[in-house]
Image (cartoon, rainbow, N blue to C red; front, side, top):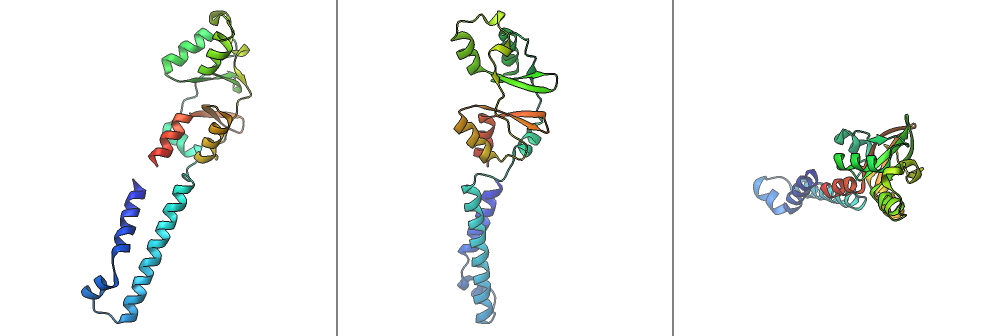
Length: 186
């Protein structure tokens, strides 16, 4: 939204010509010429800024994204059964659950884990603890990670959820959907 306003203003200023200035104001030719060049330089700077911002995605970090989301950390203990964990994930309408022992992140249990490590392996979900089928030592990011960096991690690692951890404390989790939504919004 903000970018389109800046782009509209820059376009308007760029479309102004020396002739338009000359018709409205009677100034010496050198003043008109310098005014035009200053305006042209300003419009070029705005266009370069828009190009650079568009090329790098955005300047936002995961800290700003989490600040807007007001995140809640949803987690289960390692001794919870897969059935109970999946039930909670369904209630919360989320695709992954952090597995935490007290305040320490020990793993993450995702929909993919339920399909490949439980159902695909023929295990009974009501008799299987999450600790036996979770992804241990999940890839984590910090609040200073940019949205572009997070999207690169999600794409290259082929994962959908990134716990955001700062000084050993879990602050929240972002999904590939959160990242995509934010980048499209910008």
